[in-house]
Amino acid sequence: MKYLLSSTNYVALIFIIFLPSICFSQVKSTYVGLNVISEFESSLANGTPGVGITIERQLTKHSGIESGIYYRTHIYNQTFITNSTVFSFSVSEKYISLPLLYKYYSRIVNLSAGATVDYFAGWSQKSGTDGLKVNSHSVDPNFAFGIMAKAGKSFPINKQLFIEPELRFNYIMPTLRNYFGIGVSLKYKL
Image 1 (cartoon, rainbow, N blue to C red):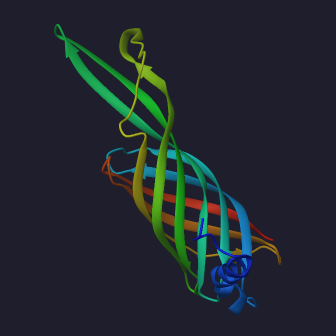
Image 2: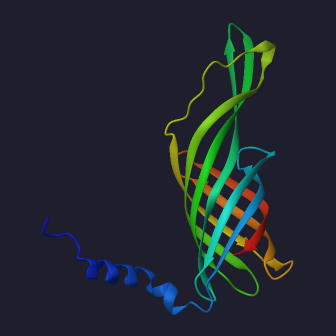
Image 3: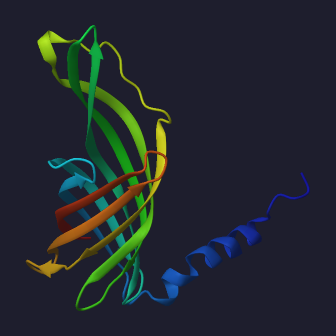
C-alpha cells in the first residue's frame, strides 16, 4: 500500500511519542506497588475489601500517569415475597477494575483523577433464607465505565520504598454506584 510509513517516518513518530519523556528525563520515575483498600458503597453500610497492583510513572516534578488492576466486590441483596412468605438472599459480585489516571504531585497532597473500566468477573452466594439457593446471577452490561478521584500523601520508608495512604471516590456510570474508600499503597521505585 502507498500509505505505509517508511523507516524514517517510524523513527520520527517514535521520537514524537517519547519527546515528553526525553525532555523531562531528570525527573521521571517508575513505581510499582500493592494497594489494599476498603470501599463503602453509598447504599451499603459495611465496607468491602479490595486489593490491587499499581504502576505509576512520574514524568515531571508535578505530573504523572497512574494505572493498575484491582479486585473489588459488591454485595447485592434481594428480598421478595411469594405466597405470603418472605425470601431474601445476598450475592457477592466480583469485579476487575482498571483505572487510568492523571496524577498531580505536590508537597502537601498527591491528587489523581481519570477513567475506570470495571469488568464483571463472577459471583458467589453469601446468604439465603431457609436454604434458598441461587442458581444463576448476571449483570448487564459486563463492562462498566466510571470516573475516579483520589487524594493521598507519599511517605518514604527508604530510598526505594514508599507508603501512600489515600482517600478515593469512584462513580460507576451505568450502575449509578458511588464507592468511597480508604486505602494504603506500598510502592517500590524502580
